[in-house]
Amino acid sequence: MAIRIYTITSGLHDEESVKAISDSFLGEVFPEGNYEFKGAVFSDFGSGSLDLIYVRTGGAEGIFKSLLPEMLAKGVGRFYLLTSGKSNSLAASLEILSYLRQQGLKGEVLHGSADYLRHRISLIGTAADARKKLHGMRLGVVGQPSDWLISSHADATSVMDKIGAKIVEVPMEDLLKEIPLADGSPAPKEEPMADNVRKAYPGAVQVYNALKVLVEKYQLDAFTLRCFDLLTTVGNTGCLALASFNSDGIPAACEGDVPALLSMMISYALTGCTGFQANPARIDVQEGKMLFAHCTIPFNMVSNWQYDTHFESGIGVGIHGEFPEGPVTVFKVSGRMDRFFVSEGELLYNQYEDNLCRTQIAIQIPPEDAAYFLKDPIGNHHIIIPGHHKELIQEFLG
Image (cartoon, rainbow, N blue to C red; front, side, top):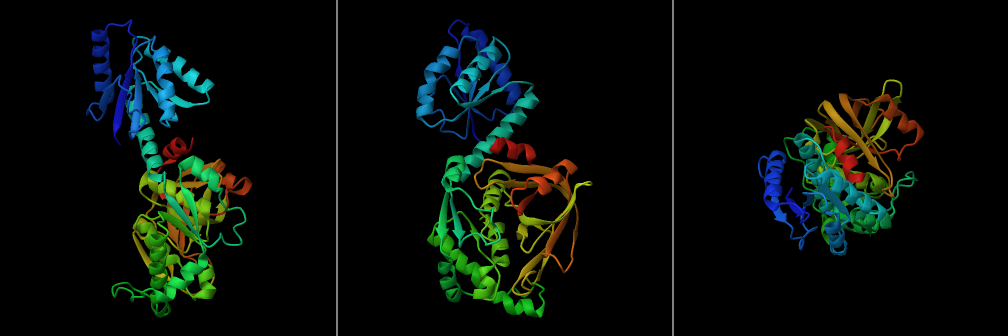
């Protein structure tokens, strides 16, 4: 995260005393000096990773107003006003923020202790970096969402407006044409497998390599796959392929679920982890205890794994992974990106039952959050992310 600091200062104040206050204030907030001081020259404002406006004194409101048209012309949509609390800096910042709100613009006054400011700036900067990563990305929808996902479509205009990403339709026929042409190298010898899985493994690898061709052909940065169609057309599954793509940093969702894919993309941009797409299997609302399950999980999220068959069909390759116990975040954004759910909890244990999808994890979340699933859920699939990231996700989507 590259931080740049621009300043506005009233000419009524003595520059020498203002500079002394500024140097002291910035030294407390940024003890490592990890920022670039741009001063009063705003010619490149808005082009950096995180650009802050340090309102150094009162009486600077008119200066900001005169600069605003130029900043808006450059596409700046958010304004962060840093204030020391001295020389009427806070009062001026409040007036500026009120003016921004009147214009329908977004902004925030950054004011408080040095520790608080460092924390807020870190969150804002991480969210800003994530927006830049997502802007211009191409989201592939390979086939349409599965027929049972009646609420799990996305609005392309909303996605473009919110994160600047484009949804790209990829015909399922393109994948089915590529699979017979793809390499199906055998499984690595060190990987333990049941005999039926070993026989299916080359076919699962073919699916992965065929998807790689489509990712390159359509220049995709992420994709979701109508994977159940593979059961009847090629007698295999996409679980292994999706686990591999997610491990390699290409968000890949199951069942053509676009909101799940959007959630995984946001997770990856914010935390570096795509997360585990899973559906709730059981919920104890009174206790806030939930069981999530699915047949694929990114390899880089588990401490170990073993191969099994796909649950519903009993064929192909499903993955039973052991997810490390500890803090997790449960997250989902809607297809219109106008609503989201996020809750922090603890992964209690992994389990294995043969009547559920192969990776199964028990999670404890607040009971009031668990009630959301039974009253107002955003589809069935949700994303499980290691660690606690609620505040960061709220910053990004707020």
